[in-house]
Image (cartoon, rainbow, N blue to C red; front, side, top):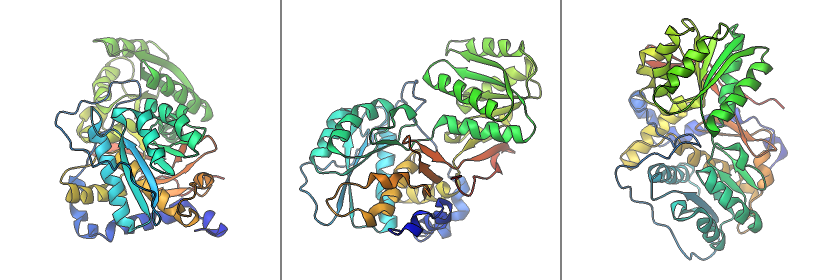
Amino acid sequence: MAHSAARSQSAMTRMGHVARLLLSAGLGLMLAACQTVVPRGAPAPVDAPPPVVTRPIAPPRVDSGIPQDVARQRVALLVPLTGANAGVGQSIANATQLAILDTRNEQIRVTSYDTNLGAAAAAQKAVADGNRLILGPLLAEDARAVSPIAQRAGVPVISFSNDSSVAGAGTFVMGYAPAQSIARVVQYAASKGVRDFAGLVPNGLYGDRASTALLRAVEDNGGQVVSLQAYSRQPGALTAAITRLGRASPYQAVLIADSGATSATAVPIIRRSGGPTAQVLGTDLWNTESALAASPALQGAWFASVSDGLYRQYAVKYRTRFGKAPYRLSSLGYDAVLLTVRIMREWRIGAPFPAERLTDRGGFAGLDGAFRFGADGVAERALEVQEIRGGATVTVSPAPTGFGR
């Protein structure tokens, strides 16, 4: 892997290795049960309040004052281990442990730091403890607090946020960027002859970015957006926005940049208000909801996301080890460890992390498929398009097998 020939290898050719990591631990005997485990759960969009945790979750022990290792690289994991997002953070922490076990790597020591007690304080402690790489944090505001501290110390940050604005100055964004999901599903719709698009977006930062992504993607594919309506979370606001949408020129497809539950509520109103045959499009938010496929209103809808193929195998193994289903975002922690392990051969113990390797054009492979970091520090992902059909999700356009150069 240290040689130049290995660097140019496509990330997709390494997907079989990721699968073997899972299968080698006994998953081959459990695949028949994979479809019964569709674990979901993720923080809300960046402009929405975090989910409420209704039961206490014991955080893992946080090591303190550990002397510098002489045989292992020190890697910090910055996630919420208490508070409203503790469930997600604990799941990510568990996933990093699972990845280390699966790779049988004895040269990495991952120490968890609780960002709910203060992201800046967690970063300062991580740097003081001698960590040379930071995985996390989860939230964009935490990434903004951590970035300058890590930059001064020369420690790269691989954030799990989906907010591309926090990337740069040594901070990389690994989360699922909504703009990429929108671009992919619009591209697929255009390939099926759709030219006239409409959009429904919530007020706020997520909706603003979804609007920009839709306009850009439609233009790139030679179409036009005939109407774009925003709505608040107030009662009746969604219906009013759909009514305004119906007054526009006829549209062939409508993007609903919101959760699956909200989209399922919107579709019957769309059918009555000017879009009786419009193709419904969604975003990667839909991939976090297990009940989505059972919604009659969303049958035939398309959305783009990372593949769930390897994730389902991982979820079975996770449940076997930890006694509960993982949050969907936990795969980011698993894949971050795989990425670190891949770079290990060029990372001498005690030396700074070779951040330049993160932008290898060949990219990396993990549970969520192939990805690579661009010059802007944002992860570009190979996404597939899924259709909701017959109570399940069916892949109608597989993820690309490689990246354009």
